[in-house]
Image (tube, rainbow, N blue to C red; front, side, top):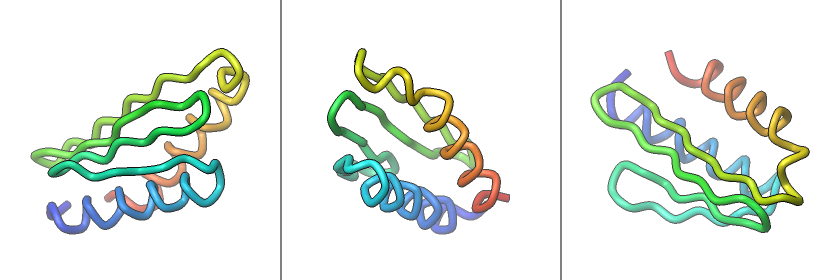
Length: 80
């Protein structure tokens, strides 16, 4: 995928996570930092590779599978 399309997909995912999970996102180059109550993560893309890394606090850890599935589903739908 072209870089601008990857960025658009990443922006959409960040916006969805902000809306549905109350996290905040901030961009630095081609990566977006996601922070919220019990959630700290980063999504980056470079040379067509998307990397998602999320650390969950103790209270957020029960939602790991749900969050993982949501991120994977979004990326599957928007990144070709």
